[in-house]
Image (cartoon, one colour):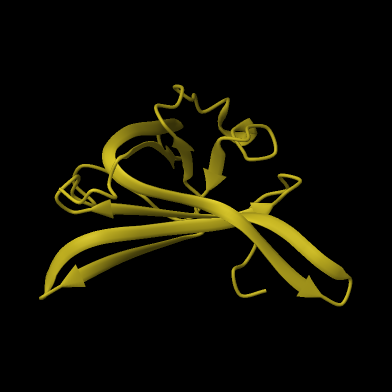
Length: 133
């Protein structure tokens, strides 16, 4: 296994039809988190960037776990979250929580290899922002 894949992350995927939140703990993943500054006319906006990489060897995308934009991630083993708690389970309320902005399944030699997911949010915890802004 890749030596970079040494983190544990908890994925949260809401299901509106059943009003449940599916919680999946994944081991042997890569979690990178750091700062980001975006200059604009009003000054520089500061935020936090996150990248998650899940190798297909560690967990099979769409079979062992589900991940989509709007899902939430928590570094480490996160708590159980009910449907009623879902609206408050956001970066503004929890510093260890991230809202997924994009999910990119990657292939190698025509076969699934890994999934990259990421996001960035403001330092004030106001939620996910576009990476292109």
